[in-house]
Image (cartoon, rainbow, N blue to C red; front, side, top):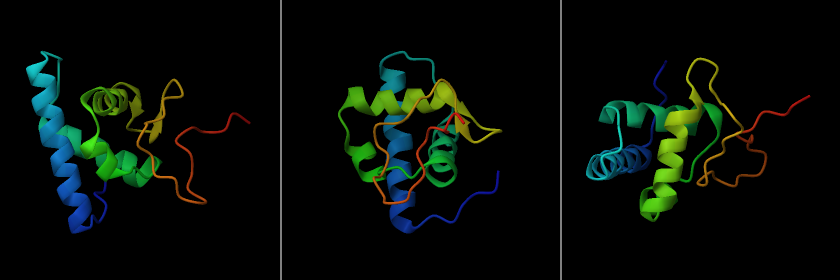
Length: 106
């Protein structure tokens, strides 16, 4: 995967999501993966599948935060750059003309 160009703000927010995600999953004894994979998965979703509202994601309550983090982990197809099982994160950015995370079923 070619790493996308991140703004300094995006980099800081993804670092917060990565650190917080790792801390929460470890504290709750949820099987987790390495911190760098959390960051890479969030970057891929944000740049290749659908734009995320990284600020809202980073500041979300634990329940909603884990929904997106663990949903991304479970449903992300890294090769096709899509989600399986029609998963869509809660914290997608509502940008006019932005593609949905869900692929149309035509």
